[in-house]
Length: 356
Ligand SMILES: *Cc1c(COP(=O)(O)O)cnc(C)c1O
Image (cartoon, rainbow, N blue to C red; front, side, top):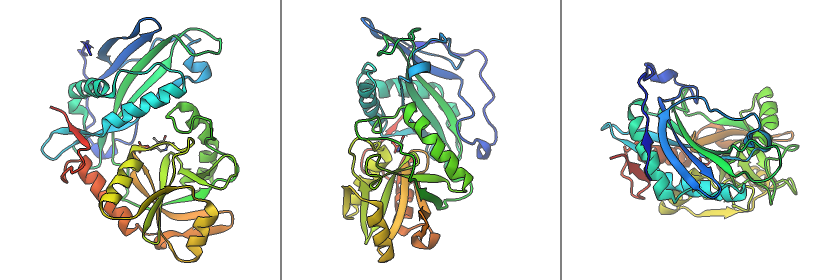
């Protein structure tokens, strides 16, 4: 891919205190852009100063939400080098999302990873040096035709922006409290649950808002048809350890195929655990809990990596998981994945991609 460079003459001051970065507030000096037009394909790949977009108020993405995104991180190793974690998986998934939203396919994932690495190389000084902090990377595509009719657009923008972000667990690696959502659903069979698109997040906000009002950090989503089978927790995938066996809901269309989820499955399999992807109901989980067989519960996603669950509330019943403490397996997975991501542990799976 030919990438045109227009670098800034006025670089921003980099954040001094990396413990106060937070998430998603600060942006690097540049962004990556590429245009699409029917008949012309993707063209004019460029890296330019981070700036506001010039969009028509009628731009289609603003009205009918034809939009997809991804999220991944660049990590700084102790030797100063920078690496990414399975970035080709993000671009593969982005093309799955694109297909569902009738957005044109992006170039092959390897070509996209190369373009991303060129961009991150330019922004390399923005990758934090504090352990746990990272450069959060947000690729996305929006439909930009100035048109109010409902149809797939003819013009798109692909953009990558990047944001130095602090450690997710700035107050320590602590379990969270969640409740089973009985009213709202996030996604349904035949819908867009398996894609990363803004609409799924918009659909989740009301439940998230109510959860926060009740001092819960997330909701556990059930399936949208029978309101019975477990799907995800907030915007993370969910895992249960039942009698020493690792179980996660199967991917049946309404669950997002997380890259952390996939990595946890591969890692636990390599350690000799029995792992399964299956349809699992909240009633079954409650029964295992009553029998003392629900060992650990945790969410997985790029942001938190592993998010242990302390309390799981279902109606009037509150399940206290592993005495509210971080489980042994949750801890081991967290330490191993973050160890690989930051280059502190050998990458036996070939998951990391170092910037040259
Ligand atoms: C992004 C996302 C996840 C986690 O995916 P990762 O690739 O592990 O970051 C899980 N659920 C939803 C709904 C998501 O949007």
